[in-house]
Length: 224
Ligand SMILES: C[C@H](O)[C@H](O)[C@H]1CNC2=NC(N)=NC(=O)C2=N1
Image (cartoon, rainbow, N blue to C red):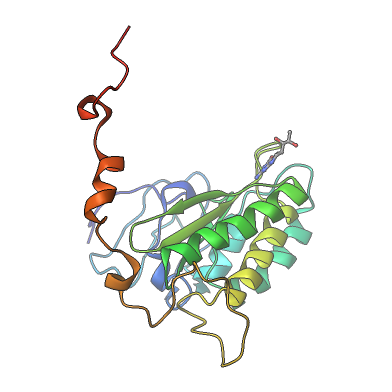
């Protein structure tokens, strides 16, 4: 039954990252010319009706491998060969066919910022920079893509790999706290066990002055 007609090119084909490596989709090799796609109403599978092509079962990550748009200066086979283990062993996904995207969750906001400083050092060193987003609940997403020339390159894959190593070291929620005796990241870094109230205290009475807006401070230089 025709549920909805939607574009199926990778650029508009977004998957909830939590499921991207667990579900297998019966997605056939799609002729570029075909635009008719049928989405079953359930989100568990996608049936694509393509003129006289039988559907073949490929897993989602194989589909992403096939849809990846490689930077023109790179060998497509080599990029796919290096990309394959990354997609299988980590939660990175190919996003809009030319980027690698992944979200981590950190135990504290401090730890997320520490992760950014480590990634920034690496990015500067290799002159290859990600798009980074951090949210209030300590989710941090990285997106690696090559801008000049446009496409996915082996640099993106190498940086994604390196970000995984740093994430393990900084104990993201998937990797859990370090074993006893492991190095701590510094006294200012939030502690797994430290309750939020201990991390924040309202300013003491005499500190209010520093917080007061300049307008109400006595003798504040008047506007010229
Ligand atoms: C001038 C400088 O070398 C280029 O702009 C670098 C900087 N960092 C980069 N980072 C990424 N992700 N892609 C690039 O093409 C890129 N180019």
